[in-house]
Image (cartoon, rainbow, N blue to C red; front, side, top):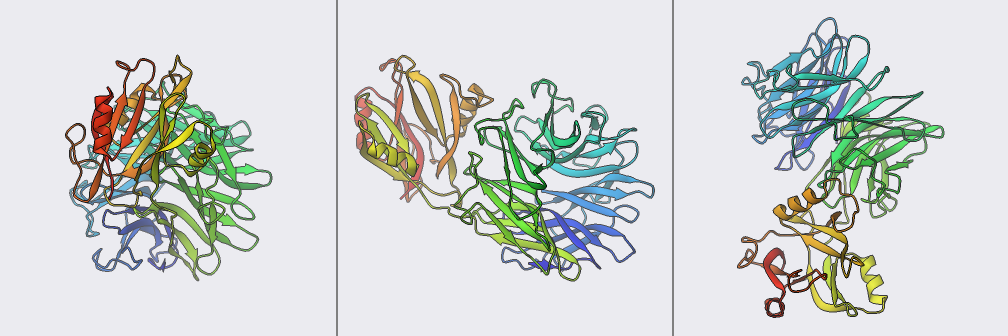
Length: 558
């Protein structure tokens, strides 16, 4: 989809997906006044057509500052209001600016009385590049600002009214320097505990590096993150981070472009919650992959519910630039089920194109947005099939020598167990859903190492229940493989939540209850194990044998 919005050149910098499937994008558009540009938004129907219920035309241009206004990030409030941030010309330099829109596309006059805010953060030029919305409606903005001698990371927090929040570092704003060179925050994520992580680039010797800073809700640096609240990671011979996402286990995924050899390539790093690289990700915590034939720049990230990582950006050859999308497995390897090699390049428009944002639809389809050359630069969107997204069968096995039960949905594990001595299928199985199924929830898989048989055997555990997930995460907050602690291995598959969970529980009509029984420590010392079954008869037999009946823990498709 190619759409001309302004008088000349237009560029999508960010996108967001509404609950009804409509796609809202924002960026900069030429206003016809010399080199002047304005904030601009467009809203598309799920079929790709402009939504004429949005400002009658499907598009909006808004002047914020004196002449040049650059929108860089967007977020949707629970009440469907649209928040856009960027940086605007105040006549002498650039300031952080914010606009809030009603779902109709009109400016929201309850936000600073005009729907717009212009706020100086540093001593001269400021550039906002990212935002997150807190559950209390406060708006956190990140970018880079001049601290009087150089550019540094800067954050500001605004009240829902549009005023700076003085409970954040006393002034509503904070500036953080990593060293003597230029530091640029480009991305932002909010943890469930209110901590804020900013990611971008900063100098590390002669090269630029991935740089992260984590802040407490008060605005102070969080010293539990790498000891200082800051992390610097050089990948290849240098690069910059432009996107960030947070996994359910609080591991942090950061993506951008890194130089290897003579070219820039897509690169991604995964960090533990304590700020150290996660070496379970591609063995080093980082992955660098060429996508096109020349320079490749990842600019946006989306995390699928199954833990797969989608990156979008742009790639060059000798003549053109292209939309580029790559998908990684949770292990850090490219996902060969996506376009056979984990990556795809698309020429949108006549020649030059670049994807600068990405959004994931509930059905797994991937929407990339940016700009493309069509005589002028215009808004461009492309949607990619996100499959395969097929249901799995969770199959139970027993290891007869130890009377140990194991449940898995993974075909590679089934093949190994089917061929292994002592293992056999019990005949118990049930079908899962996919993340595209409405109301489906992820079944988390955990492994407890050295928890049984005098610390010689481990045990797996599955749960759909949020309270159990929270309790397990609290036992191992950095999710590091440790004896007798729960190690989160990812979302294994999907199912429905019971209407009533636990003993005496049940499922909605047309769904199959899955019961869980626990061979606990009291009656079975040093041999914990769980079984899952759709058979109420088997469940009652296990309880009669001394297993702890835990009732209905999830609901499968009929």
